[in-house]
Amino acid sequence: MDEAVLKIGDREISLPVIVGTEGEVAIDTNKLRGQTGIVTHDKGFANTAEALSSVTFLDGEKGILRYRGYPIEQIADSASFLEVSYLCLYGELPTSAQYEEFVDDINHHTLVREDMKHLYEAFPTDAHPMQMLASAVSALATFYPDALDPTDEKAIDISAKRLIAKMITLVAWGYKYGLSQPFQYPRNDLDYTSNFLHMMFSYPTEGYQVDPVISKALDVLLNLHADHEQNCSTSTVRMVGSSQANLFSSVASGIHALSGPLHGGANQQVVVMLDEIIKGGGDVEQFIAKAKDKDDPFRLMGFGHRVYKNFDPRARIIKSYAGDVLDKLGKDDPMLDVAKQLEEVALSDEYFAERKLYPNVDFYSGIIYKAMGFPVDLFTVLFAIGRLPGWIAQWKEMRFDPTTRIGRPRQIYVGEAERKFISMDQR
Ligand code: SDX
Image 1: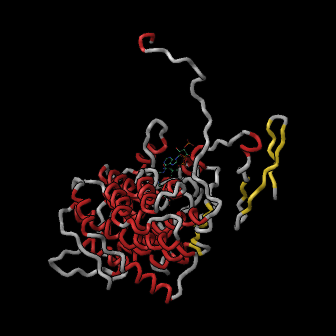
Image 2: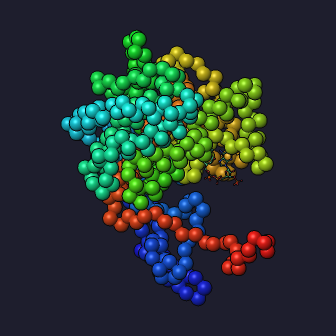
Image 3: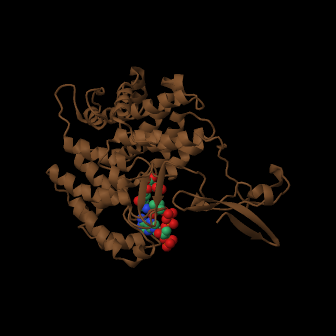
């Protein structure tokens, strides 16, 4: 198939067709308006592929997710998060020498300038961690202005490593600030995820032993969130970057997009919902009924997906991990049983079946985060740490694509026709 013929009124035009690696087909409308003066309308871009991307492939009907060709099931718990980050950023799994150099680079960027601490002091101590993180990432452009040029590959590489390295420090500092506890500094003798746990949960007054079960489970969860093609926050990062805004500003915009409860904010809402079900006596049917009631704005959080019309492969992996992590931590959380019960009832209900609504990545992740000791309002921040390599990889892909143009969708005007101005005294 190499062309599509579009019939508009008595005119017919042929448009080229693009076929992807896995046989996905797109009608290339880049010249549509120039040839016909006509544009397409596509709410939420559900039918529009703005990007030709090599980072992630996902098939929503078959529940397939691959980073740079590697199935998520094969790499989720076989590679470290920095290995997966390297894969996203550079397109290949690192050799041991490449990995060692990358880890060393990251380690030597985890420290944050001391004067950045004043930024946190400006926040109320109950500030939401996502808002603090977005501000801190944005502020990196002021504290590290020397490598911001979005057209300079070396500068981009430095800023990318700075961002991945400092993200965990910034998150941990925000957490400690909220508790009015002293900030902990990164330790280069620890791996990335253990370093994060150290900065989050250790005190200057006593030693802290990172639990390898938690560190490993967190590594897997971060891997599962690393990229997800053109989701809301990634599309935002690409859009902002298309104006040649720097990487820090672009990613800060993505963090704001991710904070919405329909996107990354859902993992926090799932735990709130499960808690409500437990407090209400465990009646999952009542919540299923609310989710189905068109007059009720309530949605079953952690369920449904713009693209997956089958099981989200990440949800499958996290679900199997949840029981394992809770057992290893010797924790028994009734939330897991309620979640499984809710899933079972929903998946056997016509409403969810006909709309192909399945658990998504957020449905079980919060239960594990909670067992690890993270507060609920930090769950979406953990999603952001995981998604960072994907944001950067997609931003780089857009930046290095010679055909990239500043993002500027069209519209169809449906407002008032032209009319004459009336002075105030005549109105
Ligand atoms: C993420 O894009 C990505 O890749 C995102 C993500 C990533 O890794 O980046 O995967 C991460 O954001 C996962 C999604 C997290 N959000 C939630 O769990 C919030 C709850 N889910 C929904 O609000 C909803 O399913 C969305 C936002 C995820 C998807 O919304 P869509 O594609 O716009 O779906 P829709 O609104 O068109 O719904 C279709 C129908 C509607 O009913 P009808 O009008 O046809 O009668 O399904 C219903 C919706 O009302 N529906 C739900 C529902 N989700 C959709 N009904 C009840 N509960 C739900 N969760």
